[in-house]
Image (cartoon, rainbow, N blue to C red):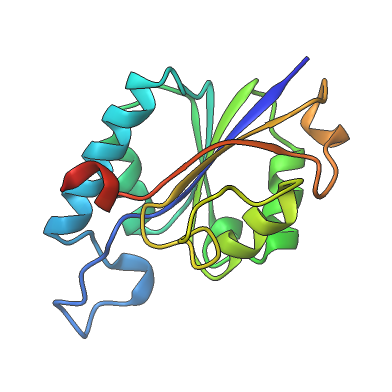
Length: 164
C-alpha cells in the first residue's frame, strides 16, 4: 500500500500588530490568496487528504481553513515550530492514507529534505517559502513503517506559480 504526505508550510502571515504573540499572528492578504490557490491546486490534482495534522498556531489554522478541504484534523501544539524529528514522530502516529501536515520553517524544510529519496527539481525546495507544498509517496502499509529518505516526490509547488 502507498501512503501519501502533503507537506505544507503555512501561508504568509501578518506582522501588522507587533504586540501580538507569534502564535496568534493571522495571515496577511497575500497569505489568504495563496492558501486559497493551494486548496484549488490540491483539488485540481486530486491530492485530497483523509487526515490533517496541523500546528495549533493561528496562521496554520487560517491556512487550513482557506484550503477548503474536508478531513478530520488534529491541531497539535507539538507542531508549532517543530523540529524535523518531532514532525517525523507525529507523522508516525497518523492513520490516514493521505495526510496533510501543516507547519512552520525552519523545521518543515529540514523535514522535507530528510523524507525524500531525491529532491524535487525545483529551485525553491531548499528554502521552502511560505505555503510551499510537497506531495510525496511512501511505499509503506503504515506510517510507523516509514523511514528517512524513502519518499518519492510527486510534486512541489509554491504559491507564486499559482497566483501570478
